[in-house]
Image (cartoon, rainbow, N blue to C red; front, side, top):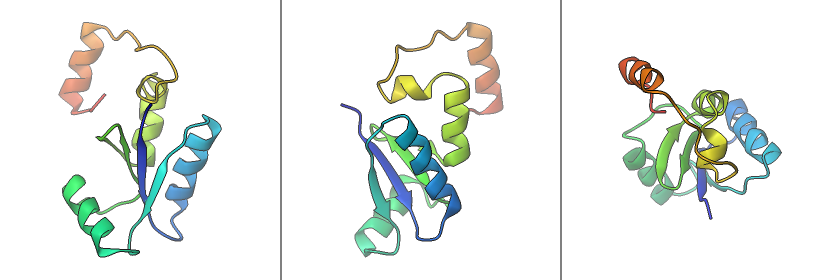
Length: 106
């Protein structure tokens, strides 16, 4: 089973968007709200190397990024695979090379 964690904060439109996005796919997730406990705040800082934006999404302990990153993963066909909803998409060598040059994670 896939574990999805989302670090959010109250009043964050992108946090609402990413939760709706995953809800539409029928994915269960654990929401960790920043500011509720020092433990969660420290965990967030460590896991994201001090990211300044929210939401931040992790799938199976792999840092995916924010809402825009989730959408990018979906647009290239990798989000459903990472969520366990489909088979791994085949990506050609050229595409992988271009993504590497751009510094993309997918």
